[in-house]
Image (tube, rainbow, N blue to C red; front, top):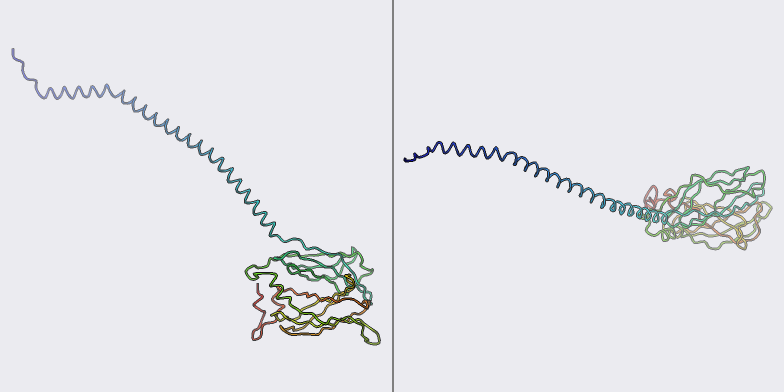
Length: 301
């Protein structure tokens, strides 16, 4: 008996049937394999995430501590710099009182500014506890030692226990861009030459009074409208009295003779010292240079 050839269509149908059967049988395995691979990938991602977070937290903790330490260090450095650059307090001496013939008093105290890059403006008065002097405006230049004075003050009793009271005190920093060297700047502005100072008695209206006479030359390159000078009388280093003189229209290069009369209980002998009382940072104290009007722009700040 001769076998008949298998119909090609039947072979194709059988092949497709076997493939579909294989797919149906393999589908649960493939599904389990996919779930396993997906789970493995999720586990790996979770492990990487946890490891990254742990590394970030640990490294960030130490980095944060370093940043905090750096900030604290910078604060300490800035505080040290600020402390070095901060203005030191002005020192104040003891108040002296000088009786005048009409029962009034001159009050006098010396103040000292130890700062080279700060000057100050303020108001002041003298207080005895029960009475007060007039209020006055004051200022002190860098590295300056000067008197603060209240002239001709009336008190019911001698103000032997008076104290200086300072109000509205304002520190002002010297502009380093405008003033390169404060010592040279101050020396240039205070270049007044005092010569031929004399203190003697002269007759006036039938009585003798004390008179201080001196010449002053303005060797600065600036002209001043009305600079004020304190005239301090000393004997053996002790201040015996204080007066003042104003030189109106004091031009650069000019020399003036100044006479100051001492009335009342002025001592009959002593050494005379002349101290300028000028706010050199105030542009209004300067006369304009020749050919110009207004304030001296060389001293604008």
